[in-house]
Image 1 (cartoon, one colour):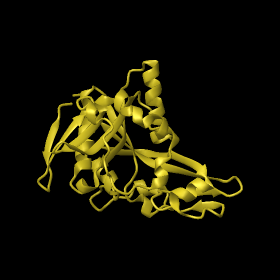
Image 2: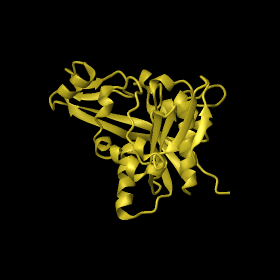
Image 3: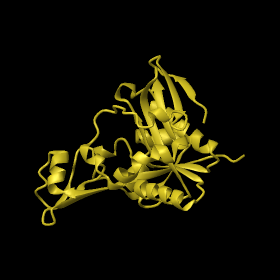
Length: 254
């Protein structure tokens, strides 16, 4: 994918390139602002995510402004998983398994799009999403799938994701802003991944991550979580099973 250049509403310029073209920025540290501490303790991410930029450099992107990294996007390549229930985790494991077995990929799966806090609200995420689509299509892949973490779902943790995902505005676009961005870019909502991102830990760990007591068994609403965390005091464990929304971006072969 050739580098793309954009002028943002603020007047600042933005350049988007693949990590294959900018390996020096493969592990750039980008300040995205506040992020729930518990979300940093997913075992699959801990095992695989750092390897993504080397293994799938052509579908990992970096956005810079005045030479400084201000955003990134990561996608793996795999044989079509047909929207697995395991979402993010299952797709990552499958992608690296495909690499080990020499399986030819036909689909990309977006893992994240991050934007520096001082560049948020300028459409950078949408530009990175479009660039991910272009990078995947440029490799001859059939589609870009994304297990999307809806922006506003954490405000309604008790609402089922199946119900949340189909909410629309009067114009027919999704009510959730991030789902809406995907649909505007050409994606279609394809279903829900009910166990996309799992975090398990002792009650002491959850207390340190959230500053909540975790002293009663049952569901616990945690700020930033899309659904309640299930707490088991007797077992000294709590588990968060996050659902995501599958969105598919198909590419024309004509």
